[in-house]
Amino acid sequence: MPSPNRNIELSVEDMDLIEAALRARKAERSSEDHHNGEVRQIHDLLGKLHNQKVFYRPGATPYIGG
Image (cartoon, rainbow, N blue to C red; front, side):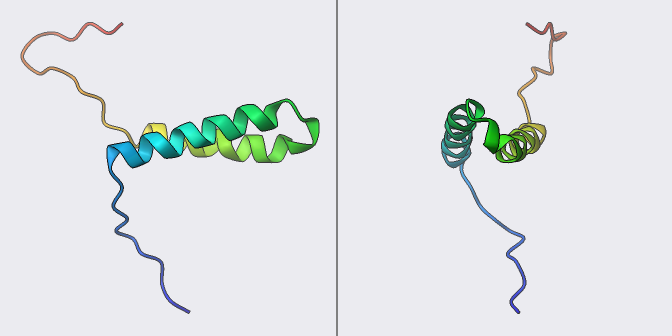
């Protein structure tokens, strides 16, 4: 059995497209009660993608979020 590729290269645009598709699928499935498991999986995957992002933070001045 081949081993998985651990060096997946995706651009920011690729990630945006994947996230948009997942959000659309989640919205589509959220209205149907019998798809709760799939909705939860999509929600968890979107969370994992979000947690891997590195957000820009200026280093020279104090950061004020908002």
